[in-house]
Image (cartoon, rainbow, N blue to C red; front, side, top):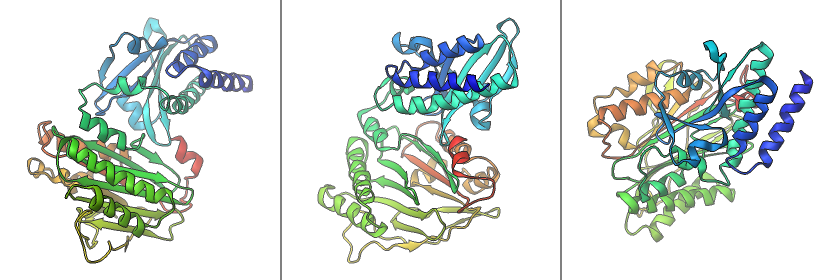
Amino acid sequence: MAQDRIKLAAVLAAAEDAAPGASLDVVARNLRDRFGARYVSFLFVDIVGRQMVRVSEEGEAMRDGQVEQIPLAGSDYDEVLRAQELLHRPAGPRGHHVIAPVTNRGDTIGVLELFLPEVTRDILEQVAETAHALAYIVVTDRRFTDLYFWGQRTIPVSLAAEIQRQLLPSAPSCEAAEFTLAAALLPANDIAGDTYDYALDHDTLHLSITDAMGHDVDAALMATLLVNASRGARRTGRDLAAQAHLTHQALLKHGRNTHATGQLLRIALDGSSAQLVNAGHPRPMRLRAGAVEEVPVRPNLPFGVPAPTPHRVEDLDLRPGDRIFLYTDGIRERQAQHVDLHALIRDTAKEHPREVVRTLTAAIAEACDGRMADDATLMCLDWYGPHPAGRHSSSGANV
């Protein structure tokens, strides 16, 4: 068994040395050599989270210019992604059908699928380890190739949507010992400038959600100003007040007489503080002890609107066990007014934030018959607090 672990380390090193996009070939060959695996493929979630896209060995789907798309809802892949557990079923003459989650720090990248002639508990554990390691390889590969981005695009992407997507974090989910975070952006038919962002430092979680005025490319350009001004301030160690000030000044100086609503949050991982700036944005919602309520924060004027005083920083009442929702006004657009968000939030209280976000955005999209008049963006944060029982940094990174 120890020797098999050494072989796994060697194959992962070889995969990292392979050309971007060829890592699956290395992993597949290793699984064939070690366990006699057949039909090895990697499937990842498409850009809208509704289809699985298959990449077979040697990148066949990418090379041929076609991708195999499989509906996600109700599939075995859906079960694996939701449960984050390996699925094993007998498959007749093909042997044993195995699907393992490919996940990195809570980001459900996709699944590894293969057929094995025989299985043992140890073999299944090693397949699961290989799938988890593959997640790190894919994350690394994505920095150097467009192959995965190309394969994700199962729908046409406009210039405005391209700009908007590049502003978002590379992973829509993040998990650590102290928290779990998931986000989603439902784009309107005419892109309307929503963005979300997060960053995890060694002692702080930073969150933001913004909604730039306007539509199409103009809105995407305004969103670019917002996100990069906020990131620039954050990355130079500025506090929340300075982040809000520099974001506001960027729109005043370059925003072409436009404005944007938004919220900036800064949460100390040791639980000592949680702060928020609200710039004319819908108030957060909080699920606490089974009850859903709006968080009582005082709004400032939107970014880009001249104001006599700086944006005010408020303390956020955040306790272990709280679930916080940040959202843009597209979540409550006219076509979706009959969607009972409070009931959905209560009904999904025991689900992972990834599934909560997917359930809520799916309800909004269905209510609008898939034709969104405004972008709808949602962030869901579960806060466990410092040193939560049963959770630690390595487990938070591994689920």
